[in-house]
Length: 325
Image (tube, rainbow, N blue to C red; front, side, top):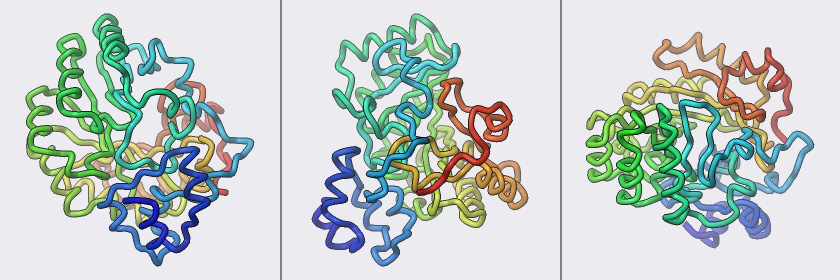
């Protein structure tokens, strides 16, 4: 989907705002996602996640350049290690869709090459093999933005030193055609590989997305979901109930509901922790334990994900942290 077509169809968009937002963080929207957007709804939840907004150009005193504390925890380029038993390996900076709330939307995440060269990738793999963490999380960008050949080469190089591999990807939701039979067969052959998808709203679960998720689950690949709590997208209990119950029906475990990270450009999409905690409590009254995600935050001190309630109690985040703009 190109900018001229989007500007013609979505009347609230302006060329100037699009160009300004794109310079800060690229605008990339797959055709299948764009075609589901209601052009007559200024608050369409798919549009809010994917299309540029003039409010992205605003900065606030509470914005953070490194909202989850990664920059000081990189033993090598393309690696992040917050825990002794887990390492995050960034396979690429590319995504099929660039979510406007992404905590990696600012420099240095989008400075430099989009992909590690062979030397950098081999060094990152060698570090993981040498330190032997229990888990390696393949992330990005989106690890399914690379070819099967490259993805499987990395997985094969990490085994048997690393027992468990996790692929954190939005591709089954934003580009379901990427979940090919060859990809599924390759992941199944390399078990245990856990796939963590990222779906925030039940309208993202199109027939094509449901079929992609079924291909993974039917092959025995475990699939879990990590949603982000977003103002105007899913910050009401009915939407969260519909999302969680739809995921369970698709045999996808609603693992996490993330508190939005305080990166510059996403303030209009943030929900303050007090409101988030109230929503999570309301959700717990409406769904079973199987359908209830943990409400977590990745604090800026780099200590790793914890329950929002605990983060507030320990002073890692403020209970009334500013929300939307």
